[in-house]
Length: 158
Image (cartoon, rainbow, N blue to C red; front, side, top):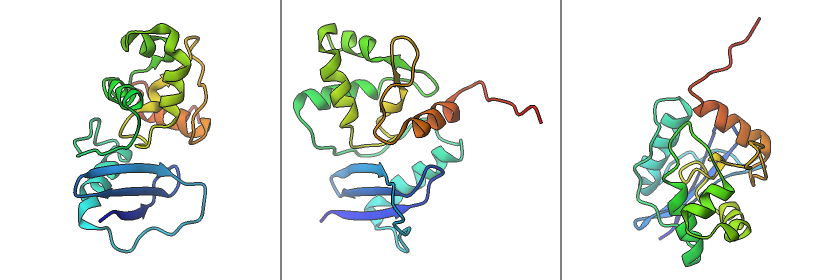
């Protein structure tokens, strides 16, 4: 049976959906949903690992994942999992990694349909010119995530 919970994150309320087969989706909401009072047992490890990530104590996730997508989308999502913490790649490089640089739009589209926010790090894909291109959660969230993962923390001058 599919379970759902809502947790607070520095970027807003996060919705987690999963069951005994794994985590199906994680998304950040632009709503005033209330955090769950009780976290279903099958989602507890995901909540723990996300909290560790946001605290800066986790760089890799070890969760059973069960996203639903086309074969191509799942290939793209698997490729996203190879992008190391604190690093970025471009849509073009990702397309080449998958064997077809002409598939750049399809790769970008699959990236945008990633159902596992943060865990499958679509935020680590940027434009070839280094620009922060589209991000379903909003570009300010993408920038926050990249800065959070950066080994070069911005120091405040004041």
